[in-house]
Image 1 (tube, rainbow over the protein chains, first blue to last red):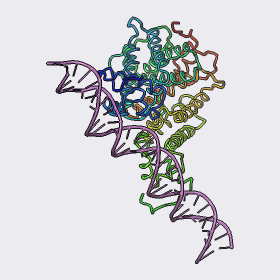
Image 2 (image 1 turned 180 degrees about the vertical axis):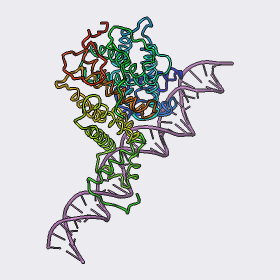
Image 3 (image 1 turned 90 degrees about the horizontal axis):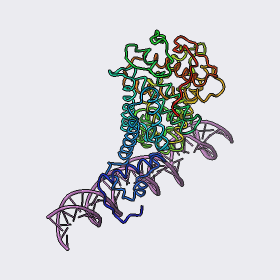
Image 4 (image 1 turned 30 degrees about the horizontal axis):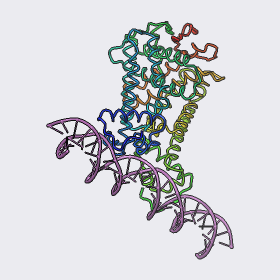
Length: 223
Length: 223
DNA sequence: GGTCATCGTTGACCGAGATTCAATACGGTG
DNA sequence: CACCGTATTGAATCTCGGTCAACGATGACC
């Protein structure tokens, strides 16, 4: 905190320190409620240094998001390979929920809003989502790209983000209920995808199947 | 465009003009890429006038979102009551898609990002979503508040937003495929909810049912 | 047709905060 | 202990949202 004036650090150290701080600050307050001055002061560092390390405020924010997304993905990848099927899904989602709980509003501020429609920001988020989607695809046993399944998984992830955000804000349901829904939902979503793309080879083994007639004639809208 | 200096309009006209402009501007560029000066110039009006009509930039943006959300909801409510079941869902979703196509990036910028974590902005969006959710609940025949179903519908809406955004950006699938998925998905989602809350009375009649054993023992996660 | 009040409208001004950059000094090296 | 590379500084600048007292178009009233 109260350093001697001008403490000189290794580039990596300083960068890491600033990213941790960014994660903390942008967790509790919105992008434009956090001024560069505030960040600099909190870090015990001059304003100019932030510009030296990152190109500007926007870029700093972007780096913070990438950092956060990386940590989230890492904690999901920490789930052991031995787990498969619904227990695996449960473990992945638990890791997700824990990240959200650990970082409080960070999740909302970082992964769900922040600067908003800035192309670069949404780009980082989209990359992160794509990586999560890849995990899900892999665990479902899909190899080749299947547009319908990509659609389905994208829907699922979007839903998870919305629901988790809501759950975090106003705990209507228990964590167990939330998990039960989300685990059931991923299966159901993949089953809908199978209905529309019956040729894809997915393995949906695992306890709770809702489907008994896999490839019913797909419903097609008027026109 | 090149008006005589100082054109005086009725309050309502001017306000409507400014809202339309806002919708157009915030559609193509992000919130803080559009300066008050730019808006004023584009409108052929002084900066001060914007402050007269709306309290400030944030409030102006907020009003624009509310305006857009209102139009979206209105177009969904234009679906005739005579349609029920999957055709109704299809019609609602079609209205949704048409709104998105008509307003191009507006949808992405306004309903999916914008200022981001600003409480008021997310509040407006959340209100809008809640109204859509209420439509879905009604159409599903639910009366009393059912937390599990609220969760499920929130998931669905979140997924729809994500998927439609993606679809609009990079047309991977045909509109028909997208609709088929989304119509199948709402049913599947409600079925998952029924699994977790079997007492709720929903009517899921309509062509494509995936369920044959409605209330299987719900899967419960470890711990 | 002229005068007057109303209020839609203006534009110069202010302050906060993002960005720049030439100067500074810390820490390792000889 | 002097020196050098570079991490670090902070004052100057610029951009942009926000304020406010004055202006003038419109319509009412005589």
